[in-house]
Length: 209
Length: 103
Image (cartoon, rainbow over all chains, first blue to last red):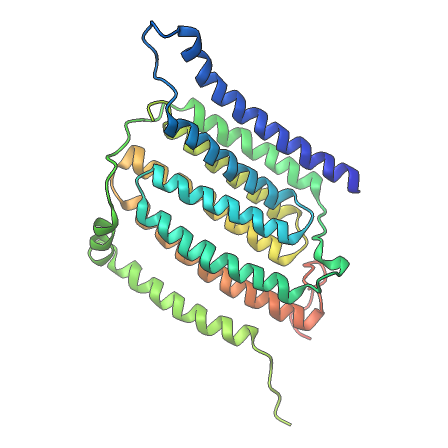
């Protein structure tokens, strides 16, 4: 069981790297072939290289979540994926969402997940490796899903005129208190219910003797 | 930035979503399954913000993604509380072992 899993992880990882390098070089090759004298489709800029690096980190983190054998490495892969997604939000002029992602996901959810791992596993126990079964069904569904999503992403002629890069925090605040006031208040109720519910579920039962 | 458009962000979102599906389906560890759900929500969030920037050009998608982030945090809190409760009852967090709703 060990060798096929490691093989699967390496093949997934190398396939991802090859795909990203291929996409990147497909952009790079016309620019190099056209030569400096001709009009280019657009030179490879620093922000573009940064984007592909961030995308690589994000996808590699997601792959680590799905494929790593140690649950702690899974949590660290989730950290990489969440950080990469936050960086992508900055590319999309969503600065407030990026900061909220770092604060809530990495500062809150990930720490909570790490606490749960430490509380439910005996360190040094065999139990800390997360046993995985059902690779056939999982891989089949992934193979069925990923090409469809990628085809939709690349084949459909999306409108690709980006919006303005500007600070959106003030506009989000106005929208939350005008257009989205009811959902905003409902979310606060949900958070209160979640807080009470989590305490009730997780506390130890005190039996009256 | 001229060569980076909506499809590139959608590709990253698709990879996040696909690996999330793989995680949810193959893990037997309850915490691992929760991490897969976080990955799924993040893939959807990347798509929301990308469509908001390139198609809508407003902030509706960003507000929606904020709601998703908050609800994901709430889901993680309740889910991990349930995981701790399962661990107290069954002494393991293997989801195959938790087949009773009472002690």
